[in-house]
Length: 236
Picture (tube, rainbow, N blue to C red):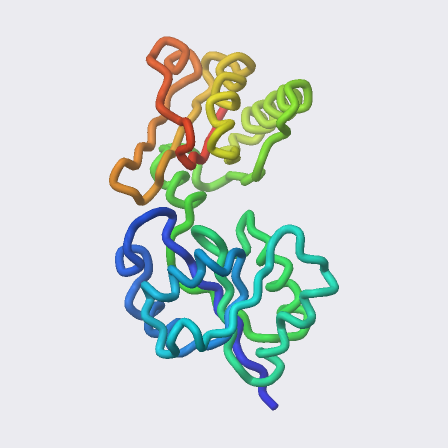
C-alpha cells in the first residue's frame, strides 16, 4: 500500500481569519484531510472549523503531540500515513516543526521515506527578519534564552559576540510575560551600537516591528511588551 502524505499546516499567529493567513491552494489541500496530529486539540478544532474541512469536526481524528510526548509514541502517530491516508500536522501558531515539537514527527516520517509537504503560511521568524532591516543572508534562530540571570547574561554576550564576528542576525523568543525582563537584560548587557529589533503581534492589526540601536532604546519610552508575542532580533 502506498503511504499517505504528511502535510505541514501553518496556523494563524493570532485572532485573524484563516483566509488572510493561508492561500486558497493550501486551504483546498487541507479540507479533504481527516487525520491530524496537533499540539492542542481544542485550539486545533477551532482552526479546522474555520478552514471548513470536508468532514465535520466530530468526524475528524485528532491526536496530540506536545513537547512532553515520548519518542516511542511517534510511531503510532504515523499509522494513518502507513495505511494510505493523508495526515495534517498543526502547531499552536505559525509554521509546524519550527520551534515546535512537530519536528520530531517530521523526522520520523523522513526516516521512513514518507512524503512531507510544507504548506505556505505565516512564520513569525521569517516575518520578523523581513521587517527588521537586518542581515537576511546570514542569521540564526535560538529559540528561548535561559531564564536565570547568570546563564542569560552569558548567552546574550555570546550571541552578540558571534553576531559581530560573523555579521549574523540572531533571533530568539521569550514567553510573553517575561518579554520585559529579557528586553531590560538586553539593554543592560549589549553594546550601545548593537541593533535590536522587537517584532510584536506579527500579522495582527496592532503589529509593530521596530529596530533601534541599544543606545536609542535606552533613551526612549519602553515599548508595551507584556503578554504580546514578540520575536527579538539582534545584529552587532
